[in-house]
Image (cartoon, rainbow, N blue to C red):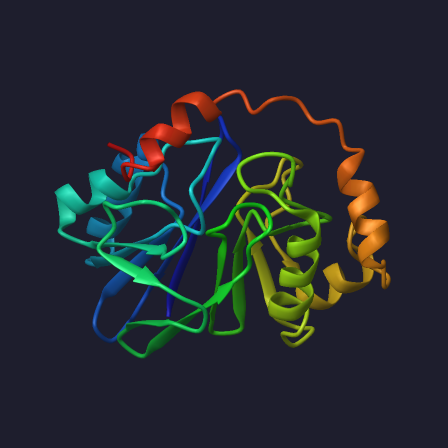
Length: 227
């Protein structure tokens, strides 16, 4: 498998490329519109064909590259059916599988940050979007957020994966690249060490986070696949 982790500085967003060495088919998870030239260069350098663009949810902090990539490469835009987006090509549900060559990418529905949040599992890795972050999780105070639902999603869909499963989040703001399911289950400051749902809800209700600075631009754009 070919794998690459991209980083967009302004919103601290990670984008992930997975590709089959056999067929040269590729997917991008959570691509950012401003970074399309970087993705294009990487795809061309490695002789890869972009088949799918996957968004883990409807983002509020950056504009997705889904529409730009579809126009440029003819790839399919993939979103969860609860996204409220009408411009996608494929609408997945829990346990849907996207296949590229020898690689199966399993969708695990992980709502709570938004209604459409989906994590993707492949080759001993889980791409958690904004559901589970390194030593944190997505906020639940706007855009259909619900702390109780997020707690259940993470515990049933992510923390049930093997300890050694590598966690690749949608963002990190401290320069961290990767974690593991086992580490987050034990040490995540909001969810780890057996914290109860009530404890988690209390933590989330008292974060007092600022209003997302790009939400008024990003949300309308992302509901049109970045148009």
